[in-house]
Image (cartoon, rainbow, N blue to C red; front, top):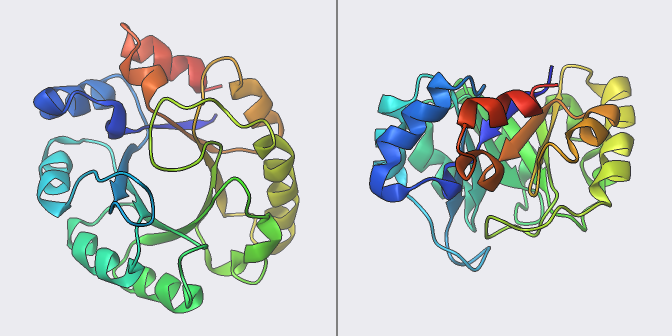
Length: 214
């Protein structure tokens, strides 16, 4: 069954505790946290003070997605919150293997993110050391964008690679996910989906989450 990680980027920040508790009670598998610095992407979101509050009210593990420059600084900032995963963009990191080791040294599962244009072959020699790869199916920075269809053959290629090199590594997809494309994503080997607008704008969040757990 596909795991669902609703992105709190689409939550009501005036009622963040309520929304986080609601998705956890509705059966999500992870709580996805988008950290943006206004430099790597043209948006600025939340820091460790807010995420610490999220961690206190979430009954499901955190999945922290760094969209930042200076990854090491941000890893050190968020590691004390003990998320399940910390993911960073391969496009921004000069020493990815070193950072993978650093994340794992905190007892956190390391993940790498690939932007829509970045081929899966770019992480071939890192795949054995990862717990998850996140494929962006929109351009990072803002919620509510349309799904980029080319992620499907890309996920299929990544699935073939991980089956050979690291079968335990999960494949996650983020951006424009809904009940309209979930079965196509499952068919190419996706294990986890990030869904922001689809879950948080749905009147029945439990039904929205269950529609993705196929």
